[in-house]
Length: 382
Ligand SMILES: *Cc1c(COP(=O)(O)O)cnc(C)c1O
Image 1 (cartoon, helix red, strand yellow):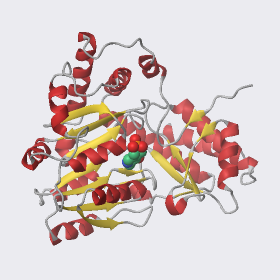
Image 2 (cartoon, helix red, strand yellow):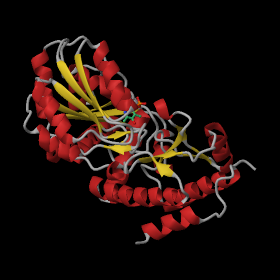
Image 3 (cartoon, helix red, strand yellow):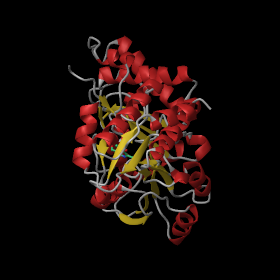
Image 4 (tube, rainbow, N blue to C red):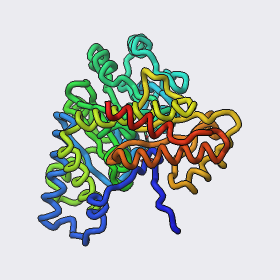
């Protein structure tokens, strides 16, 4: 019998039927008035959802393109930037900023922890930074940054743009650009929006747009805000072909989020389930890399007990029915990363936890089945 296999990596995440149906629709011309209306509504709804007073860009691309677009439209060669890194994806900004000829300063935390806000503040006082980047959730460590707290502190540094990588956070962790003083935020469709990969959304507030204006021409083509502003204002205009079916899929995702009660309600659901999942994993004797005070709601990075081989564990997990990701960097081979974001529900999570239990039993690290499932169910019914 062919087993059903759930994809529980931290993106792409499971895609529900109503979103998948949008992917399979008959194509329309990008100039078709029906599509133009759908695209415009999506851009406007996404802007309102994040309380953005500037521009919202919805274009074909991935999260990494969002990282590069944020930097390219906010800096000129030689500018100083501060990178706050909590892992692999924080570090990716170092490469991007270095190839762009920027003066790069980095503050890093140990993996599993966050950089204290006071340390960031002290660094910002040392010199004038054009921008600062923080990943809301670093997927490599499962750590969530205190974006609200950092944003509050950033009010004292109005010349430094606050750039937030929301690729593993937006539409699950709570975010509000106005309230949190975020100047630029971006994400990819395949993480907490629960859509197939291929769309990048970037929100730039009025201050970030003014910075772009002050730069004049920039040495970029596809990712220059200026090429996209006319299209975002009126999607009947052409610059480069929109990912038509993905636009519809994102629109369905936004409809689901609104039906759920908006971003806050969605965050609360994620929080409740994530804490229950994390407690359930710990009830099996497993350790989670991120400290309890800074755990993400979107995924859990779980360390293997001594004597468990990564490849054997994940191969067995696949045989039992789920696919999850391995560790990155220094943690390659030492942990598995389990995504639990987007449009998944209790029944999915029960299946996932029961699969983890069966797998641990098969590799000889668990005697009694049912503990994680029971812990999870007890927690969520509180
Ligand atoms: C996945 C991820 C990225 C990269 O996104 P791609 O769509 O793979 O380019 C960037 N930042 C974070 C925090 C991520 O989780």
